[in-house]
Length: 260
Image 1 (cartoon, rainbow, N blue to C red):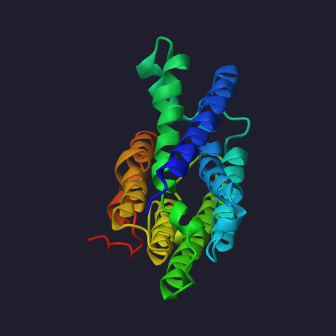
Image 2 (image 1 turned 180 degrees about the horizontal axis):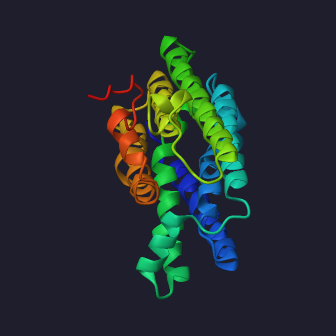
Image 3 (image 1 turned 90 degrees about the vertical axis):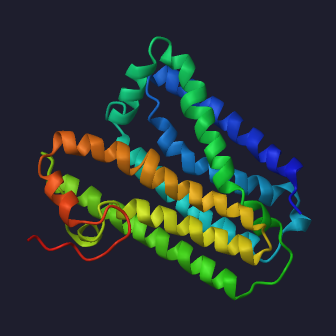
C-alpha cells in the first residue's frame, strides 16, 4: 500500500530544496548548479524516510541508504569539481536565450521545480525499499548487483573522461576505455543503477507501475536531456565526432562497428 502522505512530504522537501537552489542560481547568474544538487535531492528524500520513523526501518533501509548516498555524493562532487570556475553550461545558456526576458524568474519553474518533480518520480521506488519489513530475497541481491555495476560503470567512465580532458585541453574525441564501446557509458551506468533500485523495490513488494521510475530516467538520458542535447553541441564543435557516431553505440555498450 502506497503511503501518499509520506510521498507528498518528500515532494514538498524536494520543491523546497529546489527553490533554495534557484535563489542561489539567481545570485550567481548560473543555473548549472542544479546539476550538482540534483542527486542530493534524491538522497535527501531517502534521508527523510530514514529519519521519519526509526521503527519502520526494514532490512533494506541501510543498504539503500549506503548505495544511494555513495552515488549521490560522488556525482555531486564530480559535477561540482568539473564545473568549478567555468561559465554556465552551454545547454543552459541555450535555454536562457530562448526564455529571455526574465529567465531568472522563469527558471524557477522550467529548471528547478521541473527537476524536483523529476527527482520525485525517479525516487518513488525508494519508499517501498525503505519501509519494507520483509526479509531480503534473491531479487534484492540482483538489484543491488545492478546498482553497483551501474555505479562502477558511471564512475569509471567519468574518471576516464576527466583524465582525457586534462591531457587534451584543446578538445578531441575520447574513444578508448569504456568510451570505445559506448558514446555515453556514464549515462548507461546511471540508467543501469536505477533499474537495479527498481528491482530492489520489486523485492520489497512495490507495485509494478513503479517501473515508470527507471523508464523515465532512461528516456531522459537517451531521448531528452542527455544524449540529444550533448551530441548536438559536440557535432557542431568537433568534426571528428561524426566518425565516432558512425562506429560507436550511442548508449548500450557493444563492440565498435567496423568501417567498410
